[in-house]
Length: 317
Ligand SMILES: *Cc1c(COP(=O)(O)O)cnc(C)c1O
Image (cartoon, helix red, strand yellow):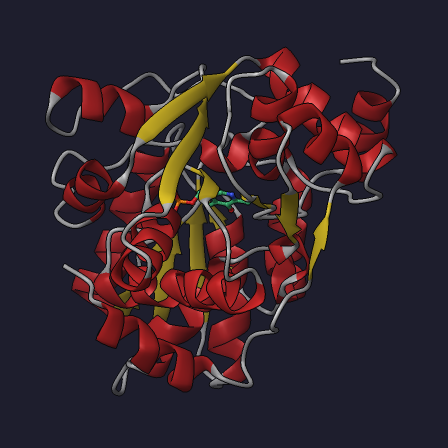
């Protein structure tokens, strides 16, 4: 398991490679929740998501390699491409056909090769495995890796410094690297803090796995929260047990509830976020998420097609 010491070491290692992101209160969400609601604006991280924390930590710990590779629904690939370029090594990002074009373009803009392969995250992952086996690449997975989890955990340290009286953290949940890292950090320092994971109803692999008591596969479906898609891996060895032990509750949202979160964060708070990052707001608006003290919503990413975002804000989807 990943410890507070691992996360503190990661914080020192990635200092200067990642941004300390701002936080701000949300008046409308505070009114709806009946407690102070804080937005942790991690969508303003370099590359547009928190994934740069884990990728930077993992790359900083590599020895000599031919390059780095991963399979990713987008933000991890983008973060890894950026982190690799910072260290002058090639990156090949293997993605499935479900990944939206704006995310592929962003990977290419970062100087990496985006290799589109297969109809699912798992098929794209096979190509990354081949590069690792046959071509001397280091495979950096998006969540089930100790250095990645420790890097994401630095966000938890930052939240406790900025909002020391936080009572509950609402954390977007997919493979669980973000939740595992953040929860490991904050629970070590504040054992009483509430940890809520939030996913979409359409294809929530971690929620289904927690229900089953072991990692299971779910059908991948299109969702507004596309960064929360994909499986957790049947051989998951770190994030499944960590999330199982650290999470208090997992909340699932409909597509309409996610859209409402995107819309209100834009209209009332002036923040343009992707679906995955809007689930905390969506859960408050839907009255699925309550807290007895200050509630922190992690806005985890900004990578949404701007015209899609505009259509959602206009109420067209
Ligand atoms: C990856 C991602 C998540 C989920 O993180 P996991 O570590 O897979 O649980 C949430 N939001 C955004 C924007 C992401 O890119």
